[in-house]
Length: 295
Image (cartoon, rainbow, N blue to C red; front, top):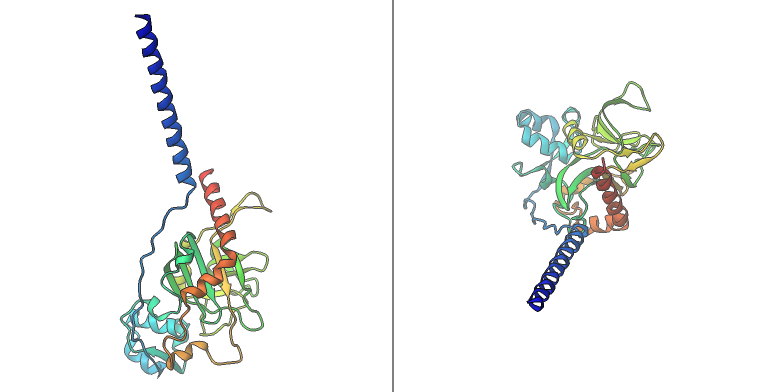
């Protein structure tokens, strides 16, 4: 009888040990899965094809299209301007198709596989005077910009969104009111915000936007988190500004008149642009998530 009791006791110990080991293995597997990056699949999209451009008198075009908000938006984007300044122009470029989306007429690619692990990133192109906001490698939003003039160029490189204000006063002129202002370089006072778009780089180093675009990015991007007045605990959304503008030449987008596809920014170009910064961006992204979790 004692023999059977001992056998039963040993079996109980064995089964309990196996169960504990299984639990530990499950916990280990769970921890490993948490550390692994989520597999993100990007939906491949294509831009509308067959778009051609022609030069037209601005006042003539506006006379019959001013009330068509969708067409007006596309033509403003194509000319890197806003409604007020479009009316001041003599000649403008106008696409033959006006039923597409904004992204069909602007040069950034609709997806970039190599940046799919970046939650959010904003990229500004000096040569094309456009910007793009990507979420996990997919183009989320795009529009025109007017960046720094030749005398006061916008600095290029990697930045992060810092503080923001619905309205602030320019450090260059206290009469300039900047709406939906999001700073990206605190010491230099550089940021993106709403202001007039004359259709060429004209700012004092900031990145001017149409108001609807400035408002969108204002809500879309993340602010920094400060440890105290001197130290940053977590950085905001990464921002890359790249390229140069031919100040002595013609507006680069005029080449669309002869070659509608020559002005496109390729997926490979964006990949090469982000590649030197990718490790840093991912590191800061992980830190921001940890800070958010520990609030």
